[in-house]
Every structure is written in C-alpha cells, then in structure tokens.
Image 1: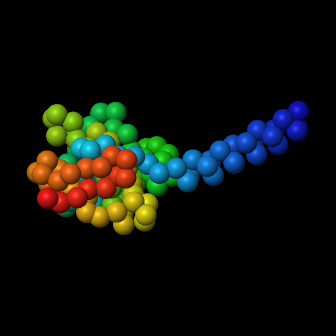
Image 2: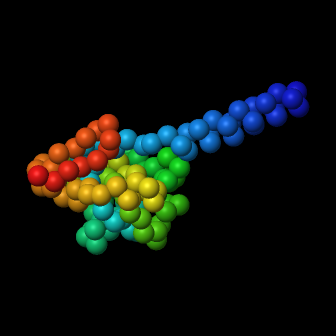
Amino acid sequence: MFRCVIVAVSALLLSSAVVAQVQRTFPANALRGSMVIGQAPEILLNSKPARLGPGVRIRDQGNLQPRPAALIGGSFLVHYTVDTQGLVKDVWILTPEEAARKPWPATAREAQTWTFDPVAQTWSKP
C-alpha cells in the first residue's frame, strides 16, 4: 500500500513538472490588459470597471484555476476574452515569458488589423 502511494505521488510530481514546461496557446481573440480583481464579479480592466461573466475561467501562471475570491486585490497582467455581452469570459494570468511576447493587441480594433500566427503565438503589425 505504502509503495503505491509513493508511486502515485512521484507520478503526480513528474507530470506537473512536464505540464509546467508546455507553452500555453491563446486564441486569436485574446487581448492583453491589466486586471485588478475587486469583489467578484467586479474588476478593473485596463483601469476601467468591468465584470466577470458567469462561469468565467481564470488560469494562473501554472495554468491552475483559482477562484476569483482568492485573487481579490491582486493586480495582474493578463490575456482575456469577452463574450457577446461584454463580460470577461476567459483570463490567463501571464508568466514573465508570455508577457515578454510583444506586440500583443490591447483592443479589438488592433486585433482586427494585426496578423496572428497561432503556431508561434505572435502578432505582427501591418
């Protein structure tokens, strides 16, 4: 029994190390911004009031999904998507490596006029 626990824990640790090295992919409609979480669902997105949508998915730098309440008061550089009603739908808190990828559109207008390479996860301006 004890050996089974040791094997299971070892497998879990090894798999989490592998997952941490995988590059996350972002959709073409993901915008970059700064986010401060207030009392959920209220947030500041690029210093403007916004709301988290129902069923919002927030992923931290390790790609885990913390609850918005655990992030209250935090200020984060993020990629995010919005739904058709303008509510924030998906949020990815960026790692330093992801934040270094520039340029990345901050507005829908920029995303419409720039070119996105989904394989390299890079944008290029016209």
